[in-house]
Amino acid sequence: MKLWIGETISSFGARISSVAIPLAAALTLQATAAQMGYLNAAQFMPFLMVTLFAGVWVDRRHRRPTMIATNLARAVLLAVIPVLAWLGWLSIGILCAVVFLIGLFQVLFELAYQAYLPSLVTREQLVEGNSKLQASSSAAQVGGPGLAGLLTGWFTAPVALLGNTCTYLVSALALTLIRKPEPPLAVAEVGRSLWRDIGDGFRVMWGNPYLRAVCGEAATYNLFGMAVITVYTLYATRDLGLSAGMYGLIFSIAGGGALLGALIAGWAAKRIGFGRAFFWGMVAACAAPLLIPIASGRSFLNVVILTVSFFINGMAETVTNVHGVVLRQSTTPGPLLGRMNASYRFVTSGTTPLGALLGGALGGLIGLRMTLLVSGIGLMLGLLWVAFSPVPRLAQVPAEPWGTDRAPRTL
Image (cartoon, rainbow, N blue to C red; front, top):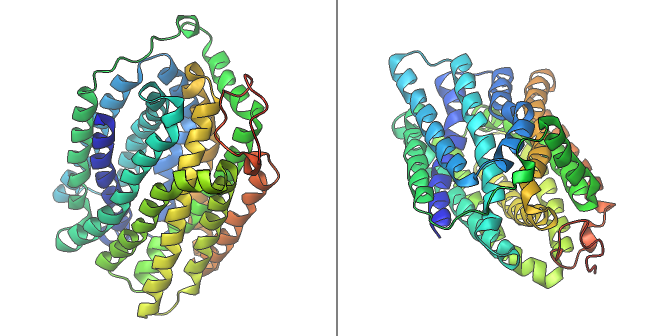
């Protein structure tokens, strides 16, 4: 409950940042398409550079202290942006450097976070626990972006980031209040070769046919999805003429889809089977962005089209995220969760900065709208990874980690 409360509050702050940072670049600093690509690449580059080493770090230490420290570090770094803006020193280069450092601590937090939850709840409660946490994140999508748009309109985008600073501090306090002890560290793992530990993470992931398929799809999705996001802010504010308030409002309304997805994730798995719910969620999440380039000109219809697109995407992506995390947690032995998640995030998030650079380059070469269309088609290609895997045939969450029980019940 303490973890849930803390993450609910920090999720609202994170949603403010997700809107305020690109708006600060687009509106305050007048960034070009290429500069937006650099900004998004800097934010996710740490996943490519340090994730593998961070996974070993997480498995060799207790997870809760790591999460507390990274929350405090991100709070301080976010507070730097409005200070620099007030002094007149903020630039695209400095903004890229700050978001890069924030990304470093985000890597550590997310790896520790996903490995920490199974120590708080039982295997049977993983879907429910992840669904509740995802529901909070989805609820934040409803209120956070709209609030960010309003704060940006009333003040400036850099000032709006102060809200996220406070929420990280609250999250750190909530984690400090948790008293349930973590399982003891595996002494045999401490002192082993760093590269052998990293190799263990890859062996677990690639040796598991379920994780291998999901990893391939996620890597493809993040590559082309980030290309979409990179040019979308410019397309919405410049080509379609959306104000900062309307930009945030669309994300807020669409966030209702993410909340709905969190609420129905468990129901869908029981109704049509875990694997089918997982796969069809992927299909809807990949198809929805193809609606974005349909919007053109400056009319209210554009708001409707964009809202529907992000609503469907948010709902389906949340269902997919819940099931994906559960699949990783349930098929990986506890002592290896940090390293497996590191290997997974290295591959899947490693394509994100490449997607940002791709979107920025294509936006300058073929235009923003055509980039959205090409990237949307690329998203659909990622489905091939899962369509020809055993994932859609899973009737329920595997009862044992992969290698213990290699015959989970299928549909």
